[in-house]
Length: 322
Length: 308
Image (cartoon, rainbow over all chains, first blue to last red; front, side, top):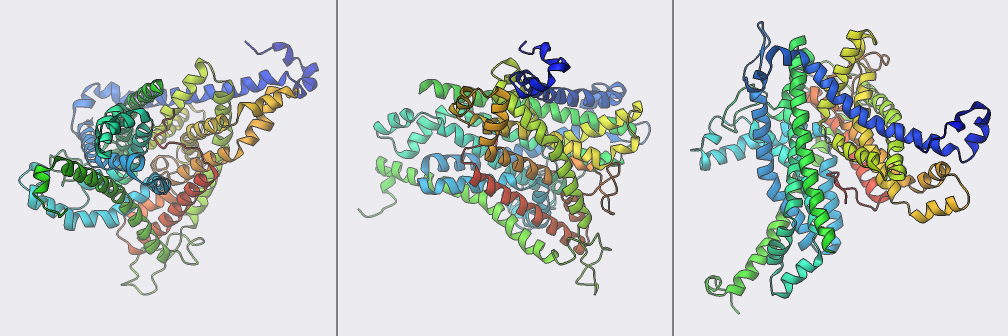
């Protein structure tokens, strides 16, 4: 330990505060605060487990397999419809968001003339600065009517035979929530993918170009292949954001506790169900909602740790080559 | 050479050039696709929000619901309670999270070349990715359990205090990470110069390193504040909302993002207009802070939180 207890003797306090012995105290102060952050994270996990305890004891593992949410006694709570809604909306978000984000990343790192890269990168990043609730408000007033009147009828006229697009276009549904999420994950996925592309050593590009490859062939064969674990990590990071997103989804998903295949039906996600019911629930239901929150957090944590490891590995490989 | 569609069937190089060009157009279109919603949000917020922002917007409270197209003299009202609440919540949260976050950043950057430092950085990153609604549940449950134990008043669960704690829990990891990045940009030579003059390490950090990294620290603080000002989900189960303005730290309090949610989903046109007014204010604040941080800070903070 660098901390010297001699310095804590009061008689020496004045000299001690003015001179070098202040070092161990400041070191200790910053270390305690930094460890406090770890304690805070631990506290979050522990408190959620304590809060969810009542529901865990009452339902055990059938909480994760049940699809009934009924607060009238005898109470019965199951998580399936919300996990389903979260997975479906996140899948729609990635399906729409990843190609666009990848296109943005390729354009900004490989294709665009240098003078336009910085301003466009900034503009895409601004998408991340818009608060979630503003996306939700925009979703209600602009996106949902557009989806209801044009996009969804058009989808039905082409793909109407698929069960995915059955039902009456309503505007506030899983598809609209997925589209909003797609917009919200674009800045995350494109920023990290772009960094992954920028980390590809130029020797890769030069090798492809010297063989006579066009710029697109260079990108496809030499750059994208090299950066694939970084891009995959970026996608998973985007998934992490989509899974935990609350307000924009709550305001656009239509909020009905049903499991249905059609994207044009309303639904619920874990986060939207918590946001809608938390303040009106009875004690056991609150505990069940806390358990849902715990499920959501563990989902987000696993997703993020996986993404981080993928991205770090990609950068380590890239640095090894240089 | 004249253009003929059949050429691509036989001329392989022409086909490759065409593909190259198409790829360029397609990737550019992706950028355009992403910027359309941004433009639409900004235009709608300005168009609908500006209509709501009148003289009473910053001083009045929630009006009775009505439709200005149907009811004459339908009051526009204002969101004074929400503006006041957000200012109080964000100020309290900044008061907690800025010192904590900066000190943690100092530890990781200046003393953290060890296992503790690395794990603090890793778990701080992990914390920035916890969904904000989970943070709300955490603070709610914490105060509920403390209330059951009798350590705090049970009414404190829905209050400005819990709201501020929830927001600071969201801000702390952001401030810690951005501070660490800002401090790492300070050249080692600056530290060595101070140390060579016989300045103790802690004074070097406090007087020289922190002030050299000032602009980066301010940027990180502003980004965290912008994030906290727009957070809604954790406030639903903590600050709770209050139509009367601030009534003390132990009472519920309103916040701007919360009224965007609550008024936005009502069918009353004058309430919806207030939601758009609040949205415009929030978007402008976020936009200004993004631009300012971009101007102040040339270094790149990646949005995904992944750093090399």
